[in-house]
Amino acid sequence: PGTCGSALACLLAPFLYLPFSTGARAGILLFVFVTGAFAATRAERLLGRKDPGEVVIDELLGVWFVLLPFAQPSVSVIVAAFIFFRLFDIWKPWPVRVSENWLPGGFGVMIDDMLAGAWALVCVSALRGMFYFMR
Image (cartoon, rainbow, N blue to C red; front, side, top):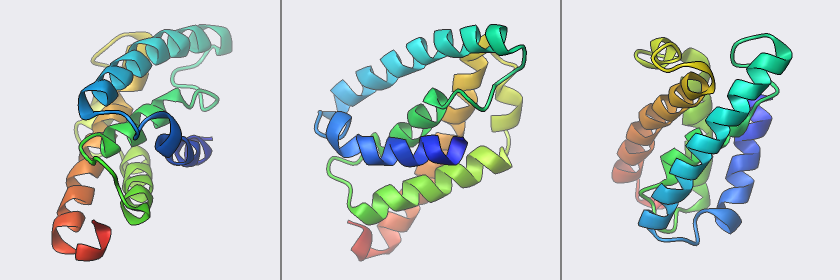
């Protein structure tokens, strides 16, 4: 489900996220974070487990966080965002894994994907700086 949610985030971004200014996108991320946290908290209660795979709003948040600073990202940047986000979301390097416990319920679910997105953003930015074709 996480890969499908991340792919859907990449497909929706050019229509529902990227047309807006960076400030508006930051507002969208805040809205997704808060509403996603409440939805994930409810899903955890209903399904009886932490960070259920059926919840993919956190993947949307993570992928869109990677794309935040890019005004008009190329397809290669969006693909790189997808690949690096999935890598860090699965691998969960520090502090991604431990961040799930920093905040209660769905807020922990959302923060770990935001941090995986931060790791992915560092990698995508570095690649974009090194390779002209990603501009």
